[in-house]
Length: 370
Image 1 (cartoon, rainbow, N blue to C red):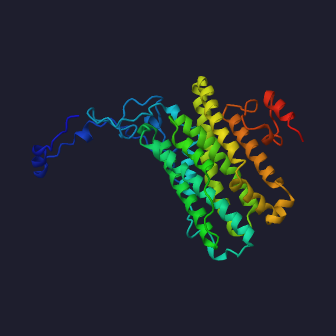
Image 2 (cartoon, rainbow, N blue to C red):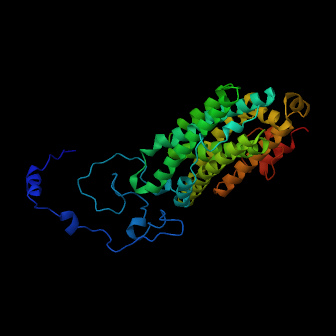
């Protein structure tokens, strides 16, 4: 690229009051196309009018020039690699962005930390171990979009803006669970290799498609189910508020991922088998997570009210949580337009309480001894 030097002749003319005004006289903007605020204010949807609201299926150039602007012909190439709308878009991304910015909360001031009660040591250890796992897995949901943001064409700015809110959400989730682990004397628990293996699988994804399927649909979907369980099992109102606030954020991320996959497959159904392959890999590690004590046992202890009670009830509570997690994940896959009821790869023993299974999977589950 040839660098353009300073136009000193123009500088001298401007100093004398001789303005160029080419940007004003020759402007091709849609003069008179006026955005009208809706009831809640001026939203992204309100300004998606005229040519400004026309998101190209394939970006015509790779620049940071605002979509709809009059672009100089010699703008530099930014090297974006994601230049097709279907690679990152979802039909709900504009509304999800507006919700995200309107529902930001603070892990410092919006959690009543001073009201945190002293818990039985078993419950405190269980809560701290759960918070350790959650503070660990939540940050990958910030690292993943951050890794891909700079590769996404600026013509898809609304999707980029939404992913920026996700980065902030996940940083706050990591913050709040780390704070909870340290706020009551329990401290951080154990970090297991199997958890790190799943996080590495997401970060090592060779495409945005693969990473989004693993993270938004599978990983964050499972975390959303865990948040629901955590809110129900929370030993005090403080933890209930933490899980409730995190849940509203996580629901947005999962909604984006589900509808993004739906949008992607509607425009290219041939990609379905690729996505099935990504989820096959992810389910393999998720199956390992369901057999990791540091991940499973804290919820059983919290549900039962202590270690002794949990041992007496065996893994009944954990089984209920696991069944709900898997069922909700399979329902999301179906909603995204890619049913996996008949090909989920989790071990049959883990599927015995999951309704809706079909074909060979249902047959394998039926063979599991009671």
